[in-house]
Image 1 (cartoon, rainbow over the protein chains, first blue to last red):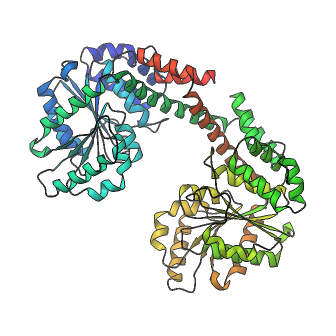
Image 2 (image 1 turned 180 degrees about the vertical axis):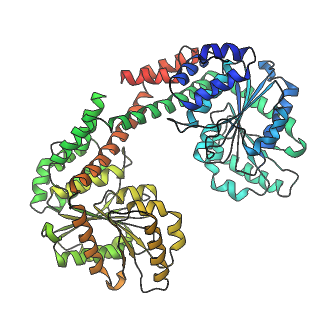
Image 3 (image 1 turned 180 degrees about the horizontal axis):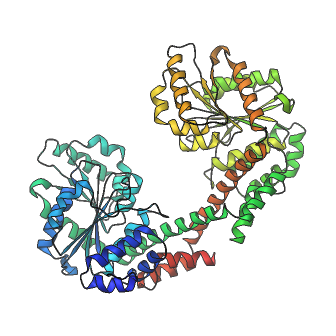
Amino acid sequence: MIPRDPSELFALANNGSRTALARLLSYVEAGGAPQRETVALAYQAASPYVVGITGAPGGGKSTLTDRLLTFSLERRSLGRDGDFDQVGVLCVDPSSPYTGGAILGDRVRMQDHATDERVFIRSMATRGHLGGLSLAVPDALRVLGAAHFRLAFVETVGVGQMEVEIASAADTTVVVTNPGWGDAMQANKAGLLEVADVFVINKADRAGVRETRRDLEQMLDLGTHEWRPPIIETTATNAGGVEQLWDALVAHRDFVRGPNFDAHRRKHLARELDKVLAVMLHAQVTELAHGDSYDAQIDALLAGTTDPYHAAETLLARS
Amino acid sequence: MIPRDPSELFALANNGSRTALARLLSYVEAGGAPQRETVALAYQAASPYVVGITGAPGGGKSTLTDRLLTFSLERRSLGRDGDFDQVGVLCVDPSSPYTGGAILGDRVRMQDHATDERVFIRSMATRGHLGGLSLAVPDALRVLGAAHFRLAFVETVGVGQMEVEIASAADTTVVVTNPGWGDAMQANKAGLLEVADVFVINKADRAGVRETRRDLEQMLDLGTHEWRPPIIETTATNAGGVEQLWDALVAHRDFVRGPNFDAHRRKHLARELDKVLAVMLHAQVTELAHGDSYDAQIDALLAGTTDPYHAAETLLARS
């Protein structure tokens, strides 16, 4: 029987126990005291290098992630940051209900790797606890780091606010497009430009690659970049362009780990901290709205002896 | 010269000075200390009866509001709650930039009433201060109440989250539709059902009224209602149906002021208080994110000596 204590679970996970690792990830999904303890331990370790992969459904993200996974396991090198011997994959679908951590249907192809000891694949879900996936995913990545994973992929389905937020928590974010997606990209230009470190035109064996590349270049011309996102053409079905994509990822990683690495990490950590702060403050409002002092303030408002601003200040001063 | 002090301004406004009233409303738009003082004074007075009018652009809301205004000034009675002698109109367009309180272009038809001393028309805008229009509009309504307005209309343009939130702060919310809007309503069914106290099918001289009414009835059949929103057909251009609409408004008002009036007012006030709480807490996050202790927590995160949850708790405990 595997233990329930997070530090014992980490010890087992570090000895290769996937069951222990899975339980730790369940803790960060479920929230509560075990989550807090797990996260406290995880943050003492180094983060893995995280590649986020996002884009509209149907673009071939799963196949591409699978190809990247295969390629990275062959290469087993993160450039000047050395080698790695195992890879984690988190599959995130915010619209999917909680499935007890089951692999989603369209991830089945990744099952090629399911018996590979060097690979750990996990579909992230949430029981709808505070902050949900936007907190659980960075926590899970930290857990992987503490279990000595030095590389992790996060694949998100869709291009909503949530998906983009999760993907942009990665060190390097890949936005996957297809030939002929000009109009679709146009609609979400600002959002894509903000998060993309690398653009991929997947299904590059189809017509319209040149136009899509031109659209992307025009979008990029509008901004100023310290790092101008390269545009890589891939054909994930036959692994075409995957080596070029991997090289682009490592090049971006080297850029990030350059002179501004500390500033980059601070920005990342600040984003995580702000998310937790926002969730905790939201919880405070909910809590404040269910107490006796709250009712007393509503009474005072009814009586006209206070106004909402004074009432709110009184409640906040007491909390 | 008119004074700057809110209590002096209220004294003048109560003597009929529209200039003083306009300045008080500018205070609640602009935020800051004068706003707080104005609101504190306003909340000591009774609220006016507020009719919110919302719906997609192009539905004829302005014309309908204008007709209601004319009709209400003729009737000058709120049923069992007695008579009134002046009416306020707030026109809210969240997408419109700050215009210094100028009347928007498409409100010009209301200028028929501009020289009518019994009418006060104001386009609400915001300089983008904390909480913006969703706080400024309820504050402005309170100011009207303190200046002895017993009836006010709030017309919002559009059916976004913001518009619906503003409209639903009214005592009675009118959702304006047109014949042939079946599909458009289908898309936002839940939102409309939640806020509508009265449905209007405006432009009822056009084809498709019967289908729209049937769609609305079917939507209403899905819910359970203490108050089932009536569906009123109007032709605002010739004032057709406006008397029936007015009667429906007063009927809803009488319903609201029934046995559950206290519960209704509590819910209203709680909504206002929650909004202010959320805005203040958001301000706290922003403030927290710009302090020395915040930077110290980021340092600790970088060093791996804390995690975001502990860091957030530390910051919140200090704030």
